Length: 298
Image (cartoon, rainbow, N blue to C red):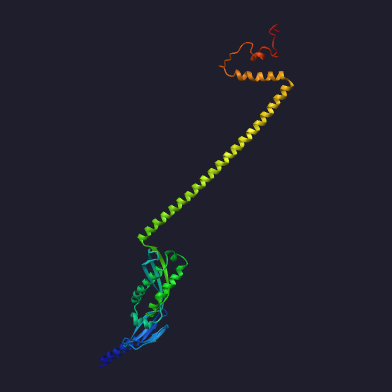
């Protein structure tokens, strides 16, 4: 009898412990809790602490209260000029209505992600389709992300989720478009280089022509000045000769003859055919250049 009573007490104690354990739950600061009875949401616990529920009859569904991040990779979009790009986006979201989140998505983040992915894909196509690729790399980038966020937010709110932000992490050309773009940019650079070379060649020819013109002018000016100086020098020399001749004609004749001898007899193979009484030998016969009288021989 006593052993049966002890066994019964142990069973009652175990049941009491189980009931007590099943009726207590803890909600942390990182989550919220839904208390569900027979499939119906009875209440939402959104503050951290220790709470009680009806054991066995009521169950708990915990919902994240933190900021969540979803990555959406390799989304294909087409810009206004027809080129296609791969886009990586990040969605930052938070569950703001746990009850609606439970009713519409079965409190499943995977379902939420699938539905947001579909809406995000459409928002990316619509936003990029109205702009050029350069807009995604300029100041329009922030406006584009805001526009995408607003388009996705409506779908998210219907799931009890709010889109905090949408960020475009990467925008790259697709491989085939990348090659075409590289070829086009390469051709543009070659064309630009050819234009620069043409401009440089034109400048080179212009500078060379100006330099040659200046050189011709400088040479012409120098020749003109040299001719003037030479003329002035010859005029001065002739004046000196004239003055010398007028002062002493005999000495002037002697000087001119002395200058003519080395010029005429220059070199070892010079031959002169002259008569012995030629005037050319006048000063070789008589240093004073006196002419003899043919009758007297003196």
